[in-house]
Length: 315
Image 1 (spheres, rainbow, N blue to C red):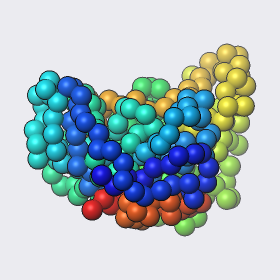
Image 2 (cartoon, rainbow, N blue to C red; image 1 turned 90 degrees about the vertical axis):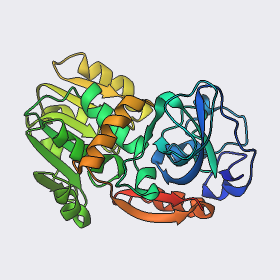
Image 3 (tube, rainbow, N blue to C red; image 1 turned 180 degrees about the vertical axis):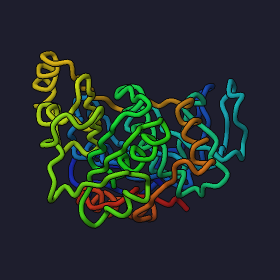
């Protein structure tokens, strides 16, 4: 199969497009003919070597954490899916292995693609939407009526977080983004949109029940004054130097700090699928690149200017 791979850590130039072995599904896995994937910041952070203590030195590595396509083969113990089904999910092996013509998914982490979604739209969903849902529900413990601020509301995770916060019953959702994306964030359901170039949400004392930092641009220490009593700060991209500081700060207050990485969870993806099919949430795609141009897609993602998701189309 053709795939994107790298044999050393480094900038986008280390990415190669060429032949790699087609994976063989285990008994509890499905083999997916990938039709679309996407770029997430975790992909180029892994590629850069920022997480090499976790990802190790075994090469080649195939990046990508989003798979959308058709079932090409099933393992002996798989019962939910059959060849030809449209499925999507987030692989739970290695660094993802999704930026390829074929990828494997554990049956437990896969879900059926909603009928109304194209492969490209589905390929934009798994990691970002799971991160938004788990950040708000599991870690933010969002309650009906909560006032929720989403920092980075026009990014891949942020755009889902705005919509999912509403779906979970938030009383008010405040989105923070740049001036060019304010109308987009408002169209996703944000009640208020703050321009981060002009307004510093951390100065709004005791305003929010949840601060969800989807871009790693703030910290609990900086945000805690903006949180109400028992408020929750959640981040998906914690800076290592801030982890200890934030945990110590949280120990001295009724407010809490939560740092997490999304889990591959099929039940969560099934809920997201239901919302997508019902139109409760929608997908926003910024740009689509062919798989062979993944290096360019990485470079674009690293600019931080994408409004929505960056998708890879796999022919």
